[in-house]
Length: 224
Image (cartoon, rainbow, N blue to C red; front, side, top):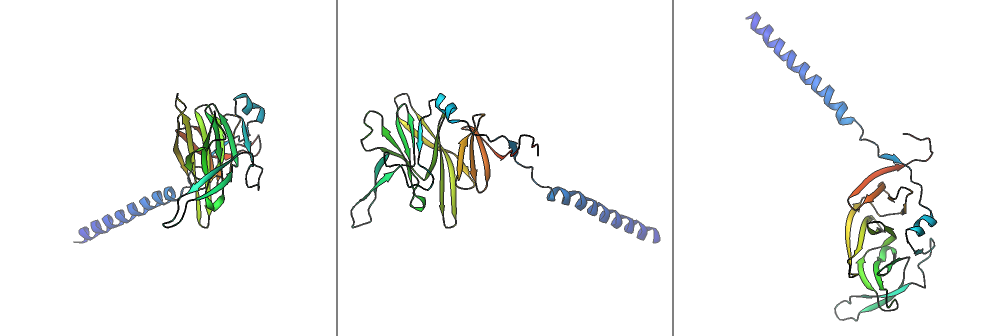
């Protein structure tokens, strides 16, 4: 009888020790911090380098509502029983392409658009390609990238759009990345990546299918 009691105690003690050892191994793994984003150089590509790749772009100065020389008219769908309402919009960014002039606008909480002004008749009513606040436009080797950002009350929404043209010049727009917040600033780096900064972090885009969260190196000697 005494032998049975000792065996039972040994088994219980062994089980308790195994459980304690398991918890001791699991808890540190659970509490391990996630890997830090990759550290990269975020130096901006110079204006001269962008010109060499045929990027011709105008942007409105900060805190300016838009550029008067690049304007278009948008029509809002009326409420039942009322007439359509039109608004003259001044673009905040204009980018030249082989198929016309891309214009982007950002009217804050009231939204914005991405439109295409016809190459042959730039004064004609432009075609609305996408409805969202356009933060900036960039000519890349694989197409045009547009950064978006909507900030209003508790909303902080952003994405990356890819604009491409067919051989006949027909435009197409698709969202290729959703971001954890609206784009607050963006630029092309010296290694030809698009860097976008959001409240949820910074991200480097190297192709329409490749995006990674990154940290910007503040000093040339920084390694962590």
